[in-house]
Length: 287
Image (cartoon, rainbow, N blue to C red; front, side):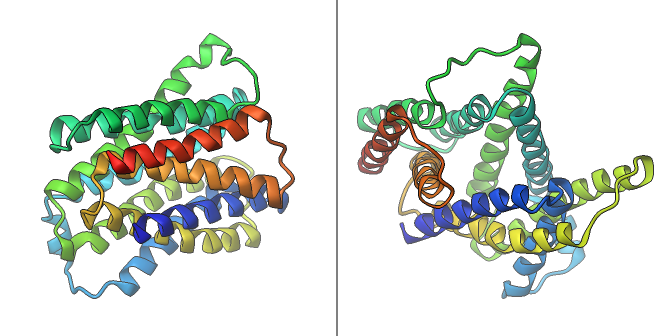
């Protein structure tokens, strides 16, 4: 359980860093790209295993690492677009509701046990996500943005499902850190292509603060995925429990941090959502 708690805390720290990006005018695309290379390099540095390029190329999990890495950075960019065009509330709901997809995969393909208590907890979790991430507004938006919402929902859900499936079937204990590193580098390469396109075909010029922001972001990003992977790997909780608890923990703590540190106002329904999130965590954990 300590691995899952650490994963949640480091992810919340990432959200705090993103909040500061906006304040210091850091370019998201550059910082996110640098962050993935930093996270991958940290993984290699702290990895205790020896490996060769041929070993990575021939690994059964390599296609999964490439897909997950590409989905990680692509989905994040789409989330940024959704926040600008549709609003943070609807975009966040679409992103967090994606936990339904890996849960279904865990039940159907990974043999996780289904119980009424666990199902009840999942239902409460979905309700709490909606209450915590909205401020009384209805989910009404221009229908032309519906594909964007669906892609965010499906993209994040597929990324989490591939990650979970690969960890369960193809990645051994000794390969786990290397698997994470390759995911980071795959995401970084895709981000680098986007940055190079902007450099050659637009008037964009990166600044030193963009690089520094990426370095600061890369450290908690590496630690988040490392401890999240450990929480899936140690067997203390089933994957159908890990994903909801992880999301509920992030929603609850980030809402409190936003209120305490950044003065973000929370409506009564938001506090109700936080309370239901705690109830959902208890139900899923006991299920």
